[in-house]
Image 1 (cartoon, rainbow, N blue to C red):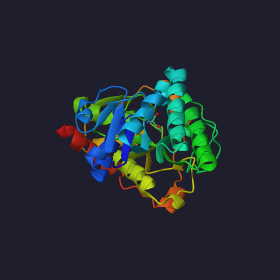
Image 2: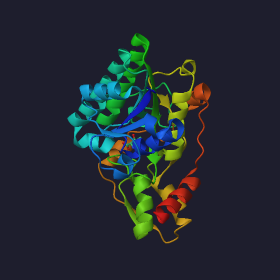
Image 3: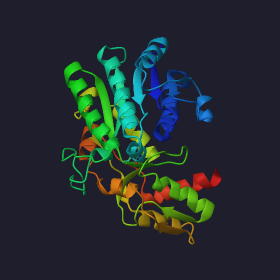
Image 4: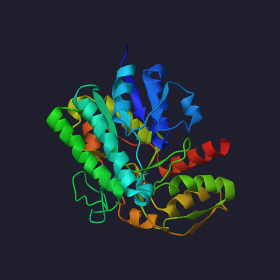
Length: 314
Ligand code: VAH
């Protein structure tokens, strides 16, 4: 039987687009989508789908045995804002799901793992401009702590047990196909929806809050590229810095006003401002560029044009 790919958390913002891309590359029947529920019916009906609890080791193991799964993309997690509301649930899901997948790789039940990290691994003491691949990491969010610890375990399992686990520190990701949920960077998606609906948006971050961001197409390309790279080119087995652009709410609003001149933004920072303030403003991804030829494609201008076009049609 052909070896299959399993995506855990396939109904999420990245998981859903990753599912379509991997099916384009490997064939629909070779990519099994899974999630805790069937909330995204379009995806559930687009190809092989199983309901799977990322915290249930035996369920994941049985799925791998039954479907001859040899590669897992573990995309299920509670993100930064939700993690602050439900710290123990975030620790439980984000960490135990990773241990389950790494342990399946350790005993060779599967051969390859992709696990997403995040710029949330950096904290208030990290230098904020052009944040380096190796630097101070004192994350001040539960989500960031799970990502920092998760990176340590990925590197440990690679060094000790030879597990082929690969990881990327995603910045904020902007997409139109699936709404994000529970993130601090989600304002950069909501703003486009509100601009088209109401020509106005009340932003939960202050106007000058600069954050590293990326269009979904770039994030998916990076994910596919790192997994297709020769193993000996992957020198970092914790997680790679990845960058595209950085902008502030004011700058994204200005880019929208080039298309919708009377769009108005107001600012009402909430608890997510402190999370955003703990993160870098820009990321140095020289190592990813050097090791596996990473390069982003979408500028803020490109993103705004594409988001308004796609959402306008939707
Ligand atoms: C969040 N979108 O806001 C995620 C991301 C860099 C932030 O990990 O929590």
